[in-house]
Image (cartoon, protein in one colour):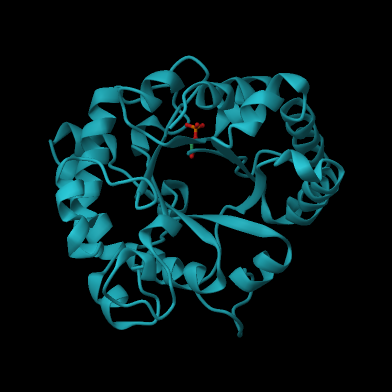
Length: 300
Ligand code: PGA
């Protein structure tokens, strides 16, 4: 399965978001895409700003009912949320309200939010709350240019992953990362790592036109999988050790940072990525769909 997440940031007005969503839907529904859609190989997620969620939800819903049996796989995502359900939190967004609007995915810990002061601990709390609310979290991690130049990429990734995905949270709380199907462990809430998408986004590659080498991205992806091994029940460790978990037990890692229709292929193949978080290139329906099409061509 490939995920293509369109992050529209604060780039569009409400009408513009609706227009773009309609354009993406229309092209995706075209006969050209029909065949690949049927392969059920790709999920597309549109993440407009909060003010446009409801209008974009309406676009997606109307389309869904129209082509109900064509298995159209375009979903609504939010760019952030708060880690509380309700309360006196002026200006914050409850994940439960997002869900009411039809949101299925939520981006957490994007570096543009971290620059505004968001910490790993905030992201951790948001991750747990998103899972409780039944949203699929897209958790962003990545190093800055200075950190990369200092050879600290893995240190940074390790710090972020271990702070956000605290084992104790999952071992003791109701929000278990283990799924009953996966064997022993905490199965209280039935959550699993399969419900989480991790986006490796080198900060220096975001919005710059400079992107990571696919091989370097793969190294980080493999490192993330290694770090998260401990969250899976022991019978599956040998599979992870071989660098790949079995179908249905996957930890999904995608890449983000200046993705376009020319470089996406390498990230999906040499980079081993299961999709992309796309900013700038997702603002153009044609370019974004070219990216999606690459995923359709490659079947995993
Ligand atoms: P970009 O943004 O594709 O414009 O680099 C990616 C992101 O911020 O997620």
